[in-house]
Image 1 (cartoon, one colour):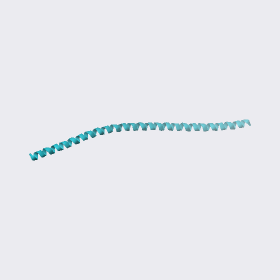
Image 2 (tube, rainbow, N blue to C red):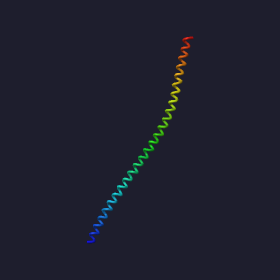
Image 3 (spheres, rainbow, N blue to C red):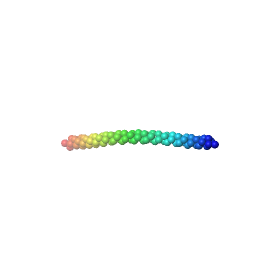
Image 4 (spheres, helix red, strand yellow):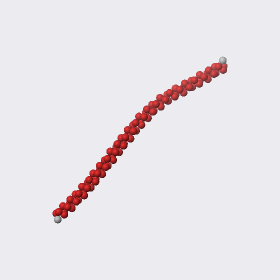
Length: 93
């Protein structure tokens, strides 16, 4: 009778060990998923940083180009006024 009780007790212990092993496997899988998610997050963060740096470089170039275009615009109008003045001077002299 004790042998049967021991066998039943041993079977319950084995079932609990199996459940514990399943739980540990689930925890390991969840941890692996978290590690993968963190890697993806870090990759996305680095990518956004690179885009931000690129955008800063583009912004600096645009500002430089805007200054150049502004200067060309002023020179254009100076040339137009000079040409108009020369034409007017020719007409009245």
